Structure formats: C-alpha cells, structure tokens
Image (cartoon, rainbow, N blue to C red):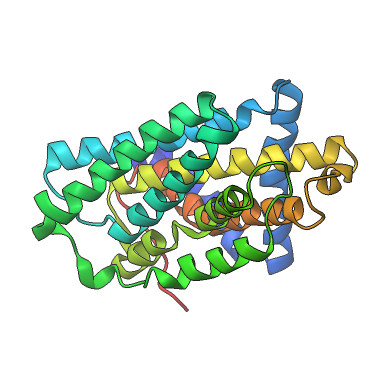
Length: 273
C-alpha cells in the first residue's frame, strides 16, 4: 500500500534525476524562489524571520535532548558540531547582551544552555555510544578561518571593536558549524530520525535567515547592502554566509524530504562520487 501511495512521488524523483544539470538548476531555483515570494507576500514584518529561525533551532536542540534522554544513545551525533554551535552562540550572546538585550538574547541563552547539556551528555554520560572515529573533521578547519575573516571583515558601528569582531566571528562560524555533522552523516550513509529532524530544523532555520537578507536587499533595490556606517563589505559577507549555510544544508534537506515522502524512517544519503 505504501509503495502504491507513493508511486507518483517516486516517479517524480526519478524524473528529476534523469534531467540535465541545467534543468535541475532551474528546478532548484524555482523551489527557492517560490517560498521566498510566499514569505514576502504573507509576512509583513520580515525581521520576525530571525526570531522564528532561532526558535526552530531551539526546537531542533529539544529533539536531540529527547533522543538522548529516551534512547540513551548519542550515536550519529557530531560532538564537534555541538561544540562549534556552543562557541558561536556564546559569542553572539556576549554581543547581544550589550548590543540588543531583546528576544534574540533570550532565545540564544536557552539554546546555548540546551546545547551545553547535549555536549555534557555526549562527552560524559553517553560517551560509550559516541562514534568518535566518524566525527573526524578538525575544529580548526572552520574555527580559524572564521576568526581570521572576522578580524578583517566586521560591522562598523558605534560599539567596541572587540564586540564587532566577535559578532562577525559568530556569523561566519555559524555558517559552517554544521559541516562536521554532515561529514559524519556522510560517513555513516544512514541517518536515524531524531538526528535527521535536528539537521532538517537547522536547514529550515537557515533558509529563513537567508530569506530575511534576500528580501531586505530586494526591497531596497540592492542599496541595503551598502548602508552608510555598516561597512561596504560586511553586509554582503553576511548574505554570503547565510547563503553558504543554506546551500550546505539544501542537499540533505532534499534527501530528508524524499525519505519522508516515501515513508522511510531512515534518511539514506548517496555514496560520494
């Protein structure tokens, strides 16, 4: 019954795989543009995208907490991604406390506390189930380039230079923090439901963050990228960072949606070419 019900979807995915690279690129562009248009028309306050994005990220962490407390295993989870997440959340929270002090600060705080709890569980309570040999991406591969980039390209505001560099570091590190988790999933080939739901939540959250900047640029006819006092390179770099993370997660989200549509509990990733 399940195969018959999903037969049209299987045919659709098979048809997409047979298309040329140009057609696939066009279809991907349509899949991105349509949600952007819908968000622009349906949501009037585009600044709320960030609030929703941070809330979805927190929800993803809650999924991990549920997994760790009920299944008593951290198999499939990347400790390094959680550590990178804690680092950029801590950096952003330090800046937010002095620069904003609003709902974003609250969401960053609860997400940081939850992430630290996940790290504690992986490092100590469930250490025997952590597959360390598959979580093999060195942290400095992403942390060091993010720090160097932040020193040279950061916002130019009235705040202290250290705070501005820290904020830029958080933005850049967030854009690549999921790489160890994706690398680990690629090594495992199969992704269990809770980890898959968490990574998919990150994908949705980053898409909303990227949508905010794209709509801002569109509404200002490109002028928003070069606001006086914000630095001529900083805002384009923010948009690039958001787009990079969205692009990194897009491939996984495709296979996640495909697996859900086919009624599969496990997400199967393709073998590297």
